[in-house]
Amino acid sequence: MNPIKARVHDAPIYNGMPARELGSEGWHKPWSGGNGGNCLEAMKLADGRIAVRQSADPDGPALIYTPGEMTAFIQGAKAGEADFLLS
Image (cartoon, rainbow, N blue to C red; front, top):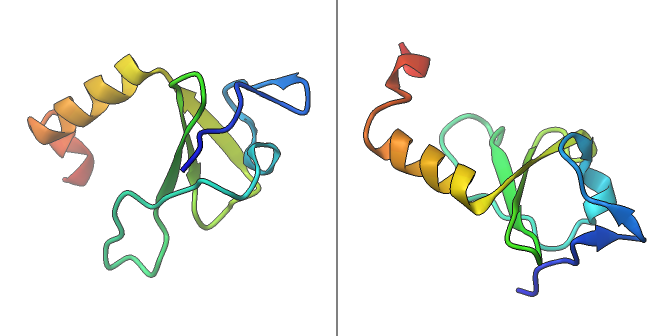
């Protein structure tokens, strides 16, 4: 997979931008549970950032995270720091 450019159609990539502006190629579902297909999709951008969107709303907003932010989230989730969200 080739990451997309840090700019799309000469427009900057920013947090909350319409996910459709990032294109339809390169989105992946890191996991999918028994929730009827409603999950998140992620895409690695050329500059190392990660775009995340809701799979049920692929034209909705994309949240853009730095590698450090995504690493902190994943490590925290693995350590149980997000378990409060499930109770």
